Length: 295
Ligand code: IPD
Ligand code: CA
Image (cartoon, rainbow, N blue to C red; front, side, top):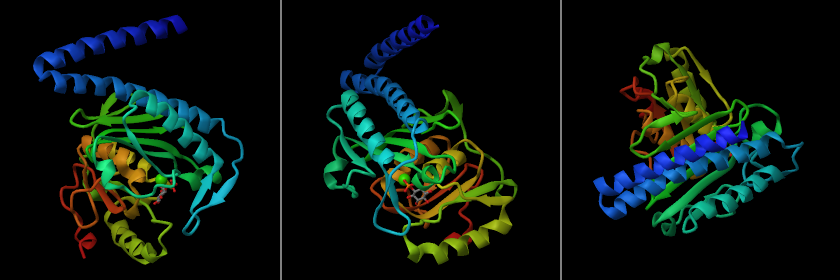
């Protein structure tokens, strides 16, 4: 069995190398090499996310540290997985910089808008993890020159691997996905409470109150990256949250865009990949922003 897997993986790599060579012939040499490298990199990132998922699944009751803000926790597992991700990802792209939730560097700096930058959330849904409420996901985004290039989000509890690279579509466990065409009235929607920013509670609940009668029902999962992926694969048709950090949405926003979603801030402006920002994600069937979002 192992030999078989090894054989197929090897074969896949050979096909990819042929693809890289074709790229070099079709595009300029540098561009072709770059595209080819990217194709290999996304597979490596997927494997690393899968390994991180195994660490998460094997975790025992975690030690918890409190960070700034209401109920903003970090566990030793967040730190352990972040260290694991940084050590593995820097092997596949040594020139890349890192922005990670548990790294202490909590803002996007202009330095990060040049070259490659991994934006990682080792456990998106840390409270879910602490309270054994599922899911929690591993989120790995790769920016190039400040623009999204690759997004990988892995839910190890259900073995669901979402991935996308810019211009190449979005995938769930290797199958192409598209967001839903359903009208809002026939859709589930999902939202985040921006839990670390008490000043946003009232407005969040006001928006949920307006959204609820217009759709089938609303959901709150506890992980923003997962919510965006749920819109990307058609489970829900709309997601909003009034404040997210870049590591919460960098990977999943690309996955959603590649699945045909409209990903904007709450005022309808194109999403910026610098964070923090509000996020409004609509499946492709929701052409207009419901007017109560736009005050
Ligand atoms: C949080 C989750 C949550 C969202 C918060 C995020 P964390 O991330 O994504 O769903 O409502 O805004 O900060 O703290 O679990 O990594
Ligand atoms: Ca997060």
